[in-house]
Image 1 (spheres, one colour):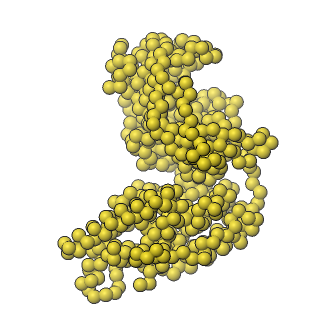
Image 2 (cartoon, rainbow over the protein chains, first blue to last red; image 1 turned 45 degrees about the vertical axis):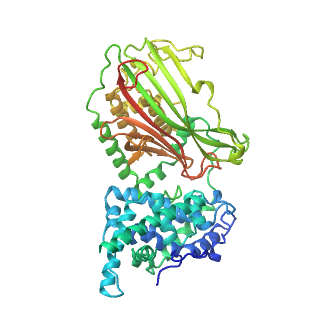
Amino acid sequence: MTHLTGTPGGTSANRYVTTALDKPPDLRGPDVTAAFAELFDAHARRLRGYLAGRVGDAAADDLVAETFLVALKRRHSYDPDRAPVKGWLYGIATNLVREHIRRETRGHRARLRLVGRPEPDHGGAVADRVDAQRRTEVLARALAGLRDEDRDALLLTSWAGLSPTEVAAALGEPAGTVRSRLHRVRTRLQALLTEENRDA
Amino acid sequence: MRELDDALDRLHHDVRTADVPLDAVRTRVLTAAADSVTPKRRSRARWLAPVAVAAAAALVTGVVVLDNRTGQQPPEAGTSSDAPPSVELLSARDYLTRAADAITAVDQPLAPGQYRYVAAHEWNSRGVGTAPPADRPDAVASGYTYLVESRTETWIPHDVTQEWLNRRTPLEGAKWLGGTVPQSEAPVPEPDETAKGERRGRCGDFFPRSQPQKVCGDPEDWDNPDFYAPLPRDPQALLGWLRDLTANRSGPSGTVFHWAVQLLRTGLVPADLRASLYRALALLDGVTVTDGKANLDGRVGVAVTIEDVHERRELIVDPATGDFIGERTVTGPQPHEAYIEPGTVTSLSAITTKVVDGIGRTG
């Protein structure tokens, strides 16, 4: 699987990848440029992947830039003791995504993207591929129908590789709430896909 | 959960894993980081009164416009990439003009015995705090803040010199917004005496002992419908009147915005003047418009917005009817209270106005 790390695929406690990159640079220190260079180099690539999944390739670069520009403006209010920097950064990005989708939805573009056909798949036997593609379409539609906070929690863990604690920091909620929300939404979506399998 | 994780993995897989060069984005971020070290003008005072808060909005009009144009967070004020604001101001004007145009009906007249009923369902910030010392306005304030829920209802008679009714009801809702002390040490503030109970009074005089005393029929009293009759309906002239009204207060755009909202909240602004008010607001620098904003009771409308680094203030209008249906305030990148997160809703309301058949009745 060429997927970025962090997809919750197992049940072990360490299925969420945490790296040394989570050690935050001193955002409130005097050398702002160096701190943001470090922050950018540590997180921009992964963040771009997450944002491209959320809003599409065309808008991803701008949202990456805006995420860091907002972080720059808010660096004084960032408290490393209270939230991991990754959660804080993805919280900013997630707010920008919501704002972006709200605006785009007015033009129906984002909604179409969420429910539209996913990219063609290039591997596996034909029958498997068709099944997988159908499940992906079902998932895309289901995602479009989720509440923002459910969708954000799911995709922050799955696509961005955040731990529930980091998601909690990103969404400003207790970690317990995030865990139970993730459990609930994953169970529901899995049931939907299983049902789709049976009907296929 | 294998199917789910596989499907998640496949969804938009190519764009998520594309190896796109990020050099240009990196340069943009680091240039902004380098620029941010340059000292910036800081606000000289901590805004305490709503009027002053609204007034501060006028300081960053360029940022507001950019925010609406790009659909993103605004860049640092003063960056050289600012586009000419005319496009979005036109858009804001277009929206507001549309809302204004929607007001085609005249207000439903009151028959004798009927009342105009104005209800405000609100969440407002309440708490305790210590303002920073006067010589250190940028110091972090201490204290804590809750968002508390309340309802205020007013019944206005056909003949305003007759008895009005005002009912203030603190509701159960209380949400912790933050503080310099743990929530466990911060009791929810009790509503004060003026925030609860029923009061009656002619001409809307619910506090007869307050000074200066309210004079029934005073043409300068906003609770008197006669106040609105002579006001200009031409948007430019109305804006001029609002500017004169607020001339002694700093920050013309934000203050005008605030006063326009206060007028609308009375529920007494006649339909034709409401339309003119929206058109006048559209002429203000820095006002932007976003649709699809919900008020507290879920009624969706167009938000007319003015903002600064501390907060964003929205007036929500139903574009179909031109009704003023609520307000919302959200903290900006530098909230007044440093312990409140940027992007936090610090007030939210739903305003309902209708005609009812008796004092104290709601239907």
